[in-house]
Length: 61
Image (cartoon, rainbow, N blue to C red; front, side, top):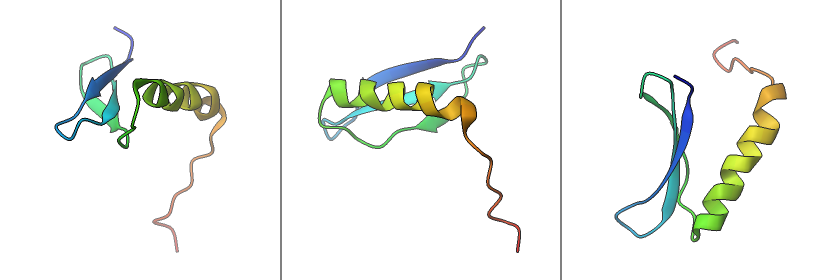
């Protein structure tokens, strides 16, 4: 099963999204957005930018 994004409204009324792995585990939770459109734009940004993103190990001295 492929991963998926889920858009939802939190207790404070903000729109957020989860990225869930194929096994159902949440691997990312977004910030709160004022609109559903804002949350969807956040998802689109990840889909566009993440495939080429570098991995930066901040644990290295």
